[in-house]
Picture 1 (cartoon, rainbow, N blue to C red):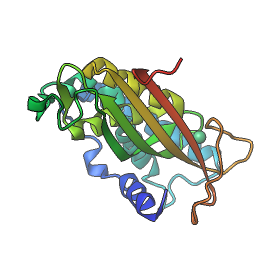
Picture 2: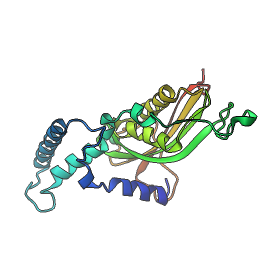
Picture 3: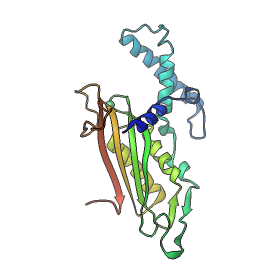
Picture 4: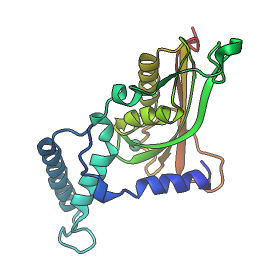
Length: 230
Ligand SMILES: [Zn+2]
């Protein structure tokens, strides 16, 4: 992950806290949403007490509320449905007059690379950065709007996750919703290395990229249909 990607990650982490509580069509009922947030808020107050902090100190007085809003936003995928994102976004593949579509529908491949996401690590609750590549072979001359691919991936990123399950869930969701000949999902996940004994991701490696010291990278993939390897 280069400086540009890190910049995007930082931007994404700069949560628009005023938007965290917005109630969209995919939101749970406001009463349940508020109940969950207040539970998280109380828990963070206890956490700060456990750390020996003065909860009334100016710098952290509003931290429980901010953390509750951040988690509400960062786990919004639990309240979203892939079906609603894909619905109405499947298009006949253009350019099939000569037997092969512009999107590669005649046995070709649609690829979207470098989808930048972030997710929450289920092992330690810290956010980690995800670089996602998705490819699929359309069937039935149907293709999904390209922007929807990243939105579907984000539904599963915005949950408590670990890299392999995240890849599997994105792959299965695209396979089930588009019904293509096959889907392949590859992820590079970047998790901060802050405690050697706490190894959250599978087979992590230290990146050779300058400026990425202190991060661990895990690469995973998931596939279905024609991409499935025996
Ligand atoms: Zn972790």
